[in-house]
Image (cartoon, rainbow, N blue to C red; front, side):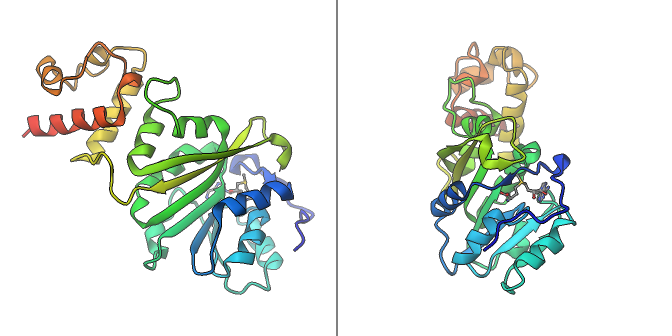
Length: 267
Ligand code: SAM
């Protein structure tokens, strides 16, 4: 299948358009995804179809979601001989992935627009119950944050909330030269697998998310100072965590324990 860039489409910065053109990288990504015939695969941001073409070789019922209206006719023309390809034009940040769930866990893939990757991941985490796995190309720094461990400089809200819902597997790096135009940053592929059973379930995940956000808004402060409006000295005592620590020193399990205590305490 031709991967030539159709004349006339200018890559749009506002949509984070960096198109993959390195065939070796494209094949490696699709091998990592390992799509099988009946899988319900959804690609976010198909662009000019670099990954789409390879995916269609394995899964005829592919669905893609693209925000750029001008790319939709290009995709339709390029893949006219794949009538089962379903092209949704829309914003992945607003898309209801549950609306396309038919009982088969969704396999979400994409070379994501880097400018929206963090809010998009949060959005997908909220729909993790219909997702089997996700494979994303992201800025390498974002992959480092997703996979970070407590105590490291990358450990923060994104690591904690992603690891609450998913197992995170960084796969491999991709250099800027694999894209056109070339991004200014290094990229990497990551696999996220939603837990079937949450390892650290919180009584109220919204409260957990708020607590984590509040704590990391004051990353440099001690927990006692950063959370002084939220957690009393007596509660620090009750939960058995050292309030002189900084937020990056607490594990996911610690944050869940603290959030659960706030609920119990609040009645
Ligand atoms: N998959 C193609 C490739 O690898 O060559 C394109 C990847 S490019 C980095 C990101 C793609 O996501 C672009 O096609 C862009 O138009 C699309 N996009 C950007 N924001 C989006 C959004 N909010 N919802 C859906 N697609 C979006």
